[in-house]
Length: 163
Image (tube, rainbow, N blue to C red; front, side):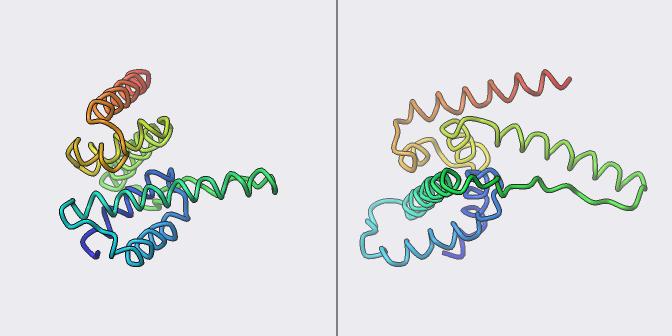
């Protein structure tokens, strides 16, 4: 499972739109996987199985959060990370501009509708084949293809607006 820790964490964090609870959800996913290892079918890819569990945990977390928000009218816990750079040298300035650009793109991806963001994150950012993404999301390969296409189109339109 160590092999999947970092890519799965990035996926969970992206799926949760940078929510600070991403690490806890990842732990829940690994715990659930460990508890249900006897139900794993070795004829299928382990990565698909573990990503599916993680996706379910992200969805569970979203439902729990929605219920809490409804009853307690809590404000969202997310806060965007801002780079704090004190040194004003050219390299640091370039670094800051690069981070700022990445932060803007990341926010654009985070703003995508859930279905598009999940497919885009898995296929493009996690570099998974469409067949595996389809299996994780329980949709057809064509649905993955369409979702990724739509996500790219939305992102392209947003980037063009910035220019």
